Image (cartoon, rainbow, N blue to C red; front, side, top):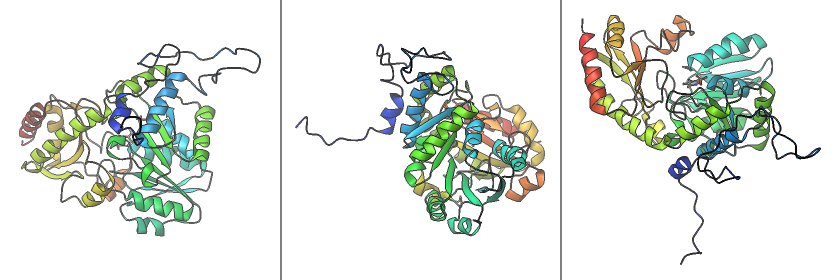
Amino acid sequence: MSGNRVKRKRTFDTTAAQAGVGADKAFGAVSVPIYPTAIYRYDAFGKNRGYDYSRGENPTRHAAEEALAALEGGTCAVAFSSGMSAIAAVMTLFRSGDHVLCSDDLYGGTYRLFERILAGYGLRFDYVDMGDAEAVRRRIRKRTKALFIETPTNPLMKIADLRGAARVASGAGIVSIVDNTFLSPVLQRPIPLGIDIVVHSATKFLGGHNDLIGGAVIVSDPSLAEKMRFAQKAVGAILSPWDAWLLLRGIKTLHLRVARAQENAIALVRFLSSHPFVRKVFYPGLPGHPGAKLHASQADGPGSIISFELARERAVPRFLSSLKTVLLAESVGGVESLITHPATMTHADIPPEEQAAVGLTPSLVRLSAGVEHIDDLVSDLAQALGKARR
Ligand SMILES: *Cc1c(COP(=O)(O)O)cnc(C)c1O
């Protein structure tokens, strides 16, 4: 029977675990070597080995990019020095006067880039609920060039319709972009659903250990790939070889970390939902979540990020200051559980009126479950909620 097997695509887990394996042609090193070199010597006039200057190409970065493309189901990935520089590179596709329709509860840093930098170059942004593809289609104008989507959104966990958005965008001849940071490719792969461009803050789940800042753009269309490679080289916000190596190492356990963090999150949601000092829990895995069904149709799990409102706004500072195991810090997706106060921390650049308009209240906190033991996380939240009673 052997020798006649149907060729089967590698599973996601194996692709992740073996990220970078095979990249070293010189010695067969299993761990991709770090190439901290700016330049590459030519073998002869007009003849090099595919590398000339590391802003354009670097072997360590290249190995990380190959891994990212494979995990997202794209054909090309381009790695950047941060999630924000990846998003900024994508925005070089647009020109003055162009209009972009965005999810209405966007990551604070993305909103800041759009409104406080790019608006000054004549780009225009509108914010809509991406849960209803038909409503999105009606908001498209003559100068609309793209949809910029987060799902689940940050911090209110609204769900966008990815297949619907892909259909609307291709029907209108515009580009669909998804920031896939919150779920990682373990749980959601927008490109196979028809989305054109995926962006990531690799600082979060992909790196996974809170030891690097990085970003990535993944595409499958060859002309978009060429434009993104050009933007990377022209703007120059590249991922360093050291960080590319750390990213590769993080990716090797991505599927394990994401699964464990999600398991913890599901247990924490159960605990929080029945706690008297918690008013409301936002989590796409809850049957009462308005986007739960849509989410389940396009993602493989609810993820490990939970937002919840305390019953009393006044209790927020005491609750956050009382936590001992869960760290008060501004990020998500690492091995450590983190908690943040969006209104004053991650989303402080969004004006209070706009925060209120989307439902982001000062009593809301956002928790990213890590991979610690669940008993330690529950008991920490329980003691801090107890102190928040007063
Ligand atoms: C963190 C984050 C970003 C920005 O990424 P950096 O790596 O911090 O520059 C963008 N989008 C989302 C959803 C994020 O969580």
